[in-house]
Length: 378
Image (cartoon, rainbow, N blue to C red):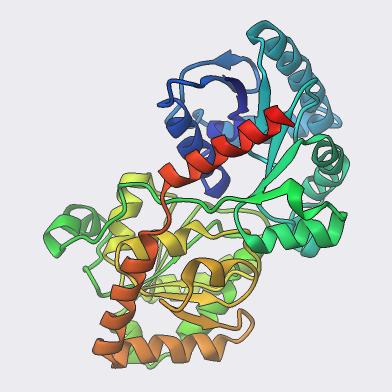
């Protein structure tokens, strides 16, 4: 089976879609019955990149600044390179893991992670919403089969686009082997670099952007007693995203007081240690197609305070505390409950470890290949 996979998401620092693309490609490359060709926008390769392009964000910003209709121009150029490559490589099937599928004369599979730009357009830049509205639906309609990260997203696609149920195949994501419970000794080298103590900080992971709803986590944290804030600083991990000025103003005084630590984007090896050392993960996102950070915390035995919205209950189940993502007082009470009840926290930790074992990248890869075969047969 000769498969073309779009891996342009690997050119930027890896967030959720990048992780999905990387882990899927890594697993597919191990299968002897499958030959994988990877498209990187400017060309093709069989080599899987494990590091982003240096200064990719600056390059993109300059391209947008000096090139009118930059996205459309880039899309046109990439489509030409893609078409030449699939003809040369004689691809039998094309998988688009990142929403916007190229035109392909053959069976194709598209992964739809969420419909956030439709449900919450104000949480995305205008140019991103414009591009999604222009290119997404035609690719969706061309696809032989559609993959989603959850049953929730399947229902969203059926509701918004009227796609038949049998064409949509939910395949849950996995968690990489870097994430597992760690001891104080294990995490010490990384945590000491960030002035953190194992089990003595609260953690929020995600790109700093409106959809991740970190302002609720911050308001909830500010309502905690001063002694708890002193004992448990709030650590923010993630890249700066879009429309962050108001959030940064909210964070600044807490950073100066030493109560909030903003440590930015971390490589996966460091992130695994920081998650494993956390007292709890706070994840109040208003909309997710899956939500990898809660799963990564669960597999480390770290209880999660999670939004009850969208797909997150499918991941967290009864292993964490599910809250209304707009209710900062509910987040405060959840933190206080975990701080005040050691046995309850340990109970959630054990349940999280057991549930997280159900989510593996091997299972995700196997089920994805099953969908490839269905697409080829159809």
